[in-house]
Amino acid sequence: MIKLEKDEKIVIEVRKHPFVFIVHTLVSLFFVLAPLLAFVLIRFATDFTITPKNYWLLLCGYGLWVLVMWVIYFIQWTDYYLDVWYITDKKIYDVLQKGFFHRQISVLRFDAIQDVTVEIKGVIPTLFDFGTIHVQTAGETSVDFTLTDARSPHKIKTVISDLLSKAKQK
Amino acid sequence: MQVDQERALEIITSPAVAWFIFGLFLAFFGVISIILVYHWRKYGLNNKQIAFAELVYFPVSFVLIGLSAFALIMYLTL
Image 1 (cartoon, rainbow over the protein chains, first blue to last red):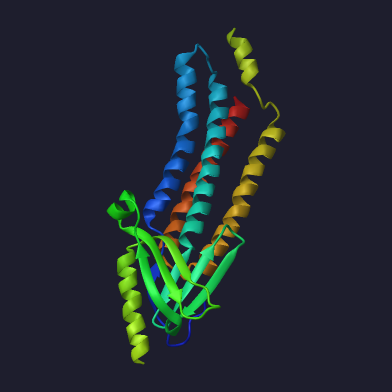
Image 2 (image 1 turned 90 degrees about the horizontal axis):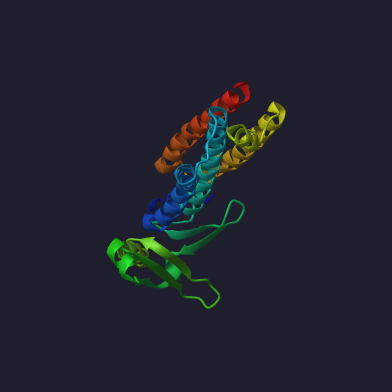
C-alpha cells in the first residue's frame, strides 16, 4: 500500500487500457460457453439421451464450472486493476502487481525526471488511444518507469509535464 | 439401450462423495475470495470500481453456488 505525504494529493491514476482486459473477458466467455456448445453439439449430432436425473448432475457441474471461471476472471481483473501508476502532485508511484503474492512499488520524484516519451504502435492502439509511456530518470543508477498499453498516453504525458513544470518552479 | 446409458452416466452415486466434491469447490471459492477481498481492501484505496467489483462478485457467486447445490440435491433425491 502506498503512503502519501500529508499535503500530497493524487492527481491521476493510470492503468492499462480496458481493451487489454477485453481480451481476458472474451477468453473467459469462451470457456463459459464451450461446455454448453459441446453439449448442444453432442445432443443434436448423436442419438445420445440423458435422463432427467442426470440433467441435474450436469447442471450442478456446469454451475461449479462457471463459478470457477467467475473466480478466475476476478483474479485477472484484480491483477489488471492493481497494476497502476499513481501520479501525485509530488511523485509518481509505480505499483506492479504480478499475481497475488508479488507486489512491487517504485517511487519517482519529479525532480528526478529527465524526459517523458509516448509510443503508440499499431492500428488498434491508435484507434483506441493506448500505448507505452516511458519516464526517463536523470541519475545513472535510478530506474526508468515504463507502463505498456496505458490509456490516453498523450494526456498522461501532458499531466506529467505540467506537474514537472510546477515542481521546477518551486 | 437407454437403461445402459443411464447407468453409464450415473457417475456419482454416494451423497457423501457428491457433497465432498461440492465442498472442495466451496473451499476453493472461499480461499480465493478471502485473498481477493484482502487485496481489494488493502490496495484498492477505497476506489469506487473496487466497491462495484465486490458488489457484483459475491451475489453472482452465491447464485451459482445456490444453483449448483439445488441441482445436486435434485440429482441425489430423484
